[in-house]
Length: 368
Image 1 (spheres, rainbow, N blue to C red):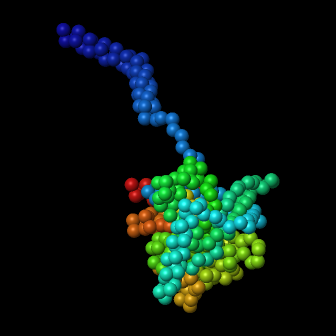
Image 2: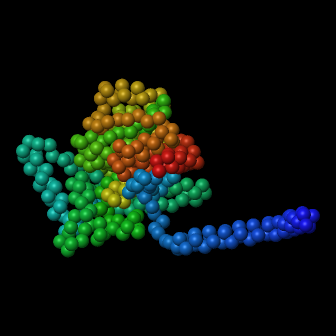
Image 3: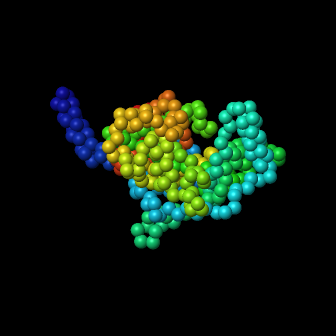
């Protein structure tokens, strides 16, 4: 009997080996195919066809802004000769139901003046009638046409009340703006066009400013160290149209006391803050010889608009350092809307898109 059991055991083992050889791999393959189909089916249940606007405002991980990059990706600079600014003759006219808001602002500032207090200066400004983009014939470089209308600062302040109720219960935002078509807006709601400049010192330090409590808008927000509004009085000699690089150079001189020969300057992009309808030309400036210490010393001797800055930070201009700085808990919700996009574009221009996006992804991943 023992011999028979041994023979049966050997036979069983042999049959098992044959079975495994013939059938195990096919069974495993069938199992893997079934599992793959099951996973695909579950994923299919979660996925649905979706659609959305092609225009998305700038975001970086948990940082979400209302800045829409309309033209420019930071990679290639926009040449001055490819930007055409046209100024129309007729001034912006407010709708009748909003004209009283401007009158309120003017009356309030007249009262401040009569009391010997400091009123808001009603500076001459420009409103954006239209912004059009095309491409040059051969190189397909961006070509920009901007049409402006005259306006003033009181009109700008009145139209910043986009969510104030009108007599019929609507608001300027709900009545005149379409969130799905952010490039279309009446000129009277776009009474702001300025420049923002990412300034980097000769020793590779990004200059970042926190706006003071003495400015009219954006008090206490972190922003570019040069943020300059376009002025009809200063930037348009005679009846000529303003030139954006000249506006940027004026900003560098007034806010950081820097002269044109001391830096290089390139135009990177055009951006609109869709929440406030404020337009910006985004620039990158690299100081040739002036280091962080040199810039601090320069500003200690005076700058025309030094009062606009409450704090100035100097950040190593490396992608990881700049991204960590932008996403730091004490400032992530205190940025001026267009500043994070400005710094992203400047980093792409200097370091390249792939290294910048890799650094951004790594920093965001660590924050989760």
